[in-house]
Amino acid sequence: MTAVSLDITGTGWLTTLQDLGRRDAERRGVPTGGAADQHSAAVANVLVGNPRGATLIENLGGELALVPDRDVLVAVAGAPARVSVDGAMAGDWSPVVVPAGREIRVRCDTGRGTRTYLAVNGAIGAETFLGSAAPDARMGFGQILTRGARLPLETEFRRFRRAFFEPPLFRLPVPALRCPEGPWTIDVVESPGIHAIPGVREVIEESAYVVTPRSNHVGLRLDGPVRHPDTDTEIVSHGVPVGALQIPHADELIVLGRYRSLTAGYPIVGVASRASLPLLGQAGPGRELRFRWVDRETSLRAHAEREREVRMLERAVAGAFGALGLATPLPRQ
Image 1 (cartoon, rainbow, N blue to C red):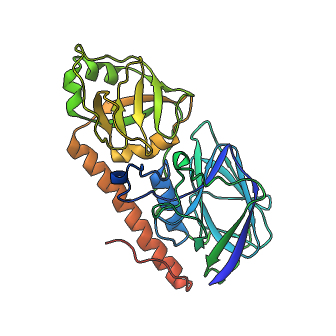
Image 2: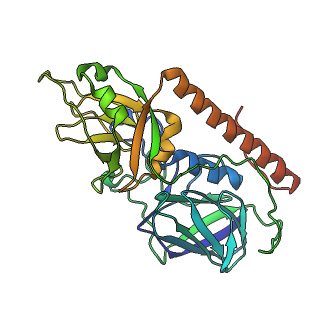
């Protein structure tokens, strides 16, 4: 292992250390947290030969920049971004060598998404809370990176160099997240609460919703038409999955995120499919969303296909890195 320092020379609107979140923490009253766009975070780690859940950097908007003091292998995934190394253009969704003393800069195209993920081959030294590096501001665990910060890294990468003008070293089957222009379509599965509000299914299906600046890590608040229950029957608060569609007393729709807690007694009318959650993690203020009702089987098939693609990438990376003498975790079976 080689000890490396990563000097943070620029940050976005909010730059944090992240991973895929906590396991079994919610029974203790602590949200699972983790990367808003779990797919992009996992793929970024796979592309540099790390386990999917390794600590990496999540950057919200603006431009992230850092300089390593030794050669490192990095990958950037998430929203479309302009990536450069010492001024030379590099690709996102691909392994990139950053030589010692050179600066990598990542500028997110905020018109197409809000978050980018930068993974580095090896293990970033980070504090953890309940086994995870994921931030939880309410618990006083911010994990915020600022300009001038220095991150320690342990890596085995030291085997080859690449000139910026050479063809890409790897041609991998990367399942890049598509962040199209225009409205994004989110697949949603009905939940039992939908039957308590007559006509709400049709309203949601036929309407457009816009993400508001009131959105945060707990959930997306959407402007658009909703309906409310006809009765004042109390709804017992209970745990809900990530992506639950909640209708509060106000005339808005909320899509709960990875830092949600209980329902607070509001009706839950549906749950976004797991395959749609990465797009929700990229949705920022002004983004128009439309919802499409699907059945549970369709939702499960879409998730299974995405998982198959990531596993295929893991196998391809293991083969390519193995040929270069670089170790990778065993692909999931």
